[in-house]
Amino acid sequence: MDRLLTFSEGHEIYRKSFRSWLEKEVVPFHDQWEKDRRVPRHIWTQAGELGFLCPTIPEEYGGAGGDFLHSVVLAEEIERVHATGLGGIPLHNDIIAPYIREHGTEEQKLKYLPRCASGELILAVAMTEPNAGSDLAAIQATAIADGDEYVINGQKTFISNGQCCDLIVVVAKTDPKAQPAHAGISLLLVEATNPGFKRGRNLEKVGLHAQDTSEMFFEGCRVPKSALLGGVEGKGFYQLMHELQQERLITAVGSQAAAEFALAQALQYSCERRAFGKRIADFQHHAFKIAEMATQVELGRCFVDRLVVEHMQGKPLLKEVSMAKYWVTDMLHKVVDDGVQLHGGYGYMLEYPIGKMYQDCRVQRIFAGSNEIMKLIISRQLIGRG
Ligand SMILES: Cc1cc2nc3c(=O)[nH]c(=O)nc-3n(C[C@H](O)[C@H](O)[C@H](O)COP(=O)(O)OP(=O)(O)OC[C@H]3O[C@@H](n4cnc5c(N)ncnc54)[C@H](O)[C@@H]3O)c2cc1C
Image (cartoon, rainbow, N blue to C red; front, side, top):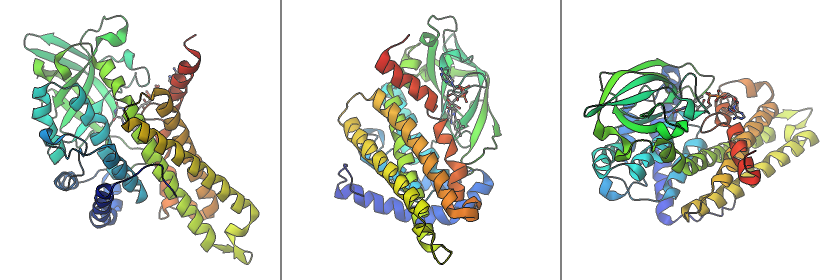
């Protein structure tokens, strides 16, 4: 498929080296990690050593000083082999480390970013609570100033990298009475060794079994005032919103690559499987279905690549990335569902990649901002608030 994006020779070398690492160190072990419900620590260490963590962080903070296309390469290659256990890497690289890079004090950047790039620190972001997901302003976790410290209390849930993380960006209210409520939200950097922090269960999910997703508890968790991201209270909501464009875009990038992988699986199977004396791809229904799937995948590719180009040009794309996040993840779900149908009974077997995708791709429509919230944002941009 022709791309609107231009990858340099450097990007292609990077892709080749990541691909060969995936094939050697990840793919043969992924089934076991799904049983273990996590990826082993040495994978993060290796990824750090090989330059696959924080590729866009500037060299002065220990990163590789690359551009967003390096992140695109990683997200695409992970999906190309359906190594969902590595989903924590784009989260670490493109969603959480940028909070520190963009909003941290110089001291915070120097303290943490080099260790994020080396794999010494694995990142998590703890926004969601049992009673507040989409409605972030309704969170109840608090971080109350006490002398030179903040005392954090609260419970979080559904936190990716929750079992393996070493540093957590915690979303909490430093001013629980602030109006509007989001003006009281701040982000705090909490090290997992803090005695006031406890990990809860590694949650049993429908899919993405090699990813750890956890509850978290903060009980009288004391952090120094220097743990406040950026050093100014009440900026947390703004800091989160500022990074949303890239968060939604990288979700769309990965989902688009996953849809291409699903299409390739369906195409290959339909051309190999025979029934009633011919390839099942030759039944007109199946041929038309493949045509529909391929058309949707092609449309997604054009849109996503265009947004990557514009994102790298620094354009504000809130509406467009929200469209891409919702449309591409819906499209992925539909292509995978059609792919299962074309596989017949084999599509429901986990030994076939399409069966695995069926259980793994459902959640993309829910996390990174649910698709309903995406439509809310898009419609508000078009018609304003009622
Ligand atoms: C596998 C997985 C990994 C995750 N990783 C993380 C993580 O690392 N960190 C983190 O903080 N969170 C994480 N989450 C949480 C995720 O971001 C939330 O589940 C998501 O934001 C939705 O919140 P909720 O589950 O509370 O649903 P709710 O907000 O309760 O929503 C329930 C339903 O109502 C809809 N809805 C809500 N408000 C509106 C509205 N105004 N208009 C229309 N419809 C609406 C939603 O779209 C949804 O369909 C993860 C979740 C999962 C499943």
